[in-house]
Figure: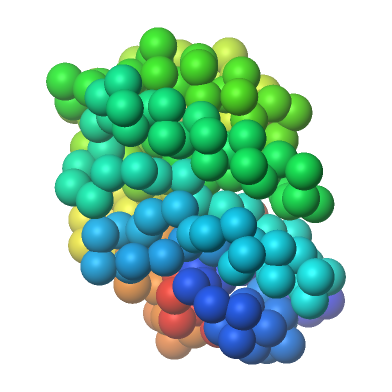
Length: 206
């Protein structure tokens, strides 16, 4: 948390240049992914390693093997496990993933991935917004201290329009509820005034 600021900012980046710029501009952490047109995919190990070599702020890495939706069949799950395993030797802060099945958190897949990612912290990404039983799924996630963050836009395109649901999720989740969804430096003060979260996430948040 930067001095003079009451909250932390996570910048979503897809390159070393973007990550370096985010760090210079005051990001507290970066989330690294590629192919943002798909809502983010796992970056290659060379890119992750380059960030580890050049950044001093924490890095979390997206793990996602499907370009459409958040379900993971056996092949996708195995690919996610391989990706985690290939990155675990790097000095990361954690991973970012989430798996949905039949509009609920895929508990079996999540347990498998959490075991693979241990002891790294995990952000459950915006897949949580697609759950039709968010309260029950958050209650289930609460049993895993490893999942220290959930990322949500309150099931809205813009976080400012999902404030009510984000606030409800904050009241349910034991860890950090991190708001996302078109958050810019201009709208952030208003969003923070309403939510009072410790973390905010965005591509243009700085």
